[in-house]
Amino acid sequence: EVELVQSGGLVVQPGGSLRLSCVATGFDFDDYTMHWVRVRQAPGKGLEWISLITWDGDSTLYADSVKGRFTVSRDNSRNSVFLQMDAVRSDDTALYFCATDENPYSKSRPEYWGPGSLVTVSP
Amino acid sequence: SYVLTQPPSVSVAPGQTATFTCGGYNIGLKGVHWYQQRSGQAPVVLIYHDTYRPSGVPDRFSGSTSGDTATLTISRVEAGDEADYYCQVYDNHSDQVVFGGGTQLTVL
Image (cartoon, one colour):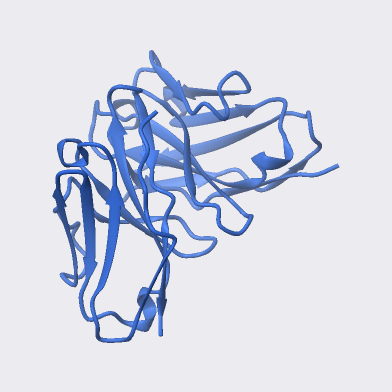
């Protein structure tokens, strides 16, 4: 059974940094692209894809809203994926999900999702 | 960048049919996926690659695409279907995963 365990919620000041982690079990982690998706807490805000990293770590992609501030990485020896968030802003306040891609060696859609990590950016 | 357009809300009475649209240029060529999300919870995939339904998803949920519009249909709507519904594609041109803005379902 696929399980994704995410690090707990965090409060960080504007301009600060934090690192989210996601540990995977139940599948061949090093065969799968991993995604990060967030949903902001403000009314009217929906799902926003923010990053992916391919199975081998050779390719990373970012949404324009986080490019240059966030960095995704993975450690296949520890079945883990990370999201380094730098220069955070108030509009980065959101629930952040890690998710597997649907098939090995693909970049298509999130399939299995973690429970989310709540990030609050506040002075 | 590629844009997916969804109406912000849909309201329907129990037992009726709810229809969710998702507009995007040549969306029928991309492979559309649909998710249900309840507040504070992880999304759940309802339909993938336009029409396929994962095991465990009731057959009340169905998907279709035509031209620039993808559609998710929920038949015999139940109170428990109240949630937000999102469409999603992978845009090879920009190399990004793209979500629509989501549609909130209200069961009257």
